[in-house]
Amino acid sequence: MKSISIIGAGPAGIEAASVLAKQGMTVALFEKSSSPLKNIADKAFLFPNFAAASDIVELMSKKLLNQNITLHYDTEIVDMRREGQGWKIVDGKGATYYSDCVLMATGYTPFDAHRKEELGYGIYGGVVTSLEMEKMIRYNQIVNSLGEKPKRVVFLQCVGSRDEKSGNHYCSKVCCVTAVKQAIELKRQLPDTEAYIFYMDLRMWGQHFEELYRQSQQEYGVRYVRGRISEASGTFDGRVQIKAEDTLMGLPLKMTTDLLVLMVGMEASEGTRCLAKACGICGDYGFAQSVDPHLGDCLTAESGLYVCGACKRPMSINDVVNDARAAAVAILEAE
Ligand SMILES: Cc1cc2nc3c(=O)[nH]c(=O)nc-3n(C[C@H](O)[C@H](O)[C@H](O)COP(=O)(O)OP(=O)(O)OC[C@H]3O[C@@H](n4cnc5c(N)ncnc54)[C@H](O)[C@@H]3O)c2cc1C
Ligand code: SF4
Image (spheres, rainbow, N blue to C red):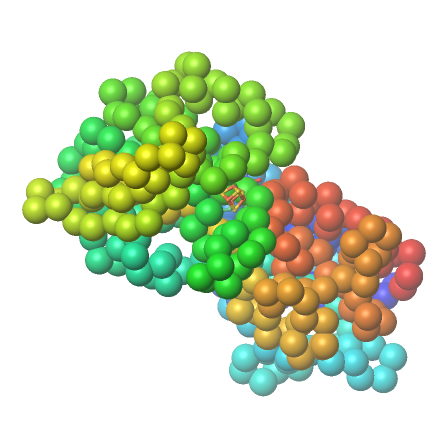
């Protein structure tokens, strides 16, 4: 039976590995971290149903228990190219591996909030990212820069997405509903804390997302302000002052908050950028490019090279799992 190298042990890589191994393919799964699913393991609860991220990690990890799958952790793949009828991939220590075909599932990296200097991330302790908020929710430790319970928390959407200055014109797709999810969790843990979400548009595209948005307002009293925050600065008592414009009212406004949560977008990971470039399949913004968004979304211009998951564009977990299964079918049909 044919062999495949899968690069990246996120939900996309694991799902594809599991399907292909069950069909008898010999699978080598490479992950640069020391464990799988790091972009899920760092979350608390998952939209749309508030499943504990730790449960999903456990369920997905079990899919790796197949004798046809060989796991290579702490192995960063830095190059890959066609050799003869198959593929040769190279890791950061110079070791080489050969297989009949390759599936890239190298995923995303969160936008680095330091790049939005005007929002004060890394300068004021009260400015945090959505990833840090996930951690605070997970450990029931939502505190301001002084270690106290916040009286008010402001979430800001579209940080590093739909943004001329950071060069990312695309929508990151998951951050609108992530803010709704986090605001609900905040109110569950700290019912007296005020929660505000500043948004440009609310993109509640998935099943149950609109209901979550309604529930956040009706049941939890989360308040929504249509507008962008232009600047954040620190106050003498460790809080954060924001300058914004309410674009529905057409009014500039200032507000003080204990925590400003930056909803960072998804960018192509370093591995995605580097490997897509090495194989000539680099698309917009460094994401991997498939041959056709309708009928060949897991195929690439290189024969025997396939792509799935968030290495192509921002996706939610159910998107990437379905995409990985589609990639597995395309591989089984072709190889
Ligand atoms: C703040 C935030 C909250 C979110 N909350 C949710 C949620 O509640 N529900 C939901 O459905 N989705 C959520 N998401 C989205 C979710 O994280 C992604 O859908 C999912 O992680 C994408 O899976 P993937 O396998 O495509 O990529 P990734 O999860 O990024 O996995 C890719 C893997 O490839 C590895 N890798 C990369 N390069 C190399 C290389 N060169 N060699 C070896 N290994 C490599 C990486 O280490 C990584 O483990 C959230 C995202 C963010 C930013
Ligand atoms: S999902 Fe929402 S917050 Fe994220 S980039 Fe799109 S519009 Fe902005």
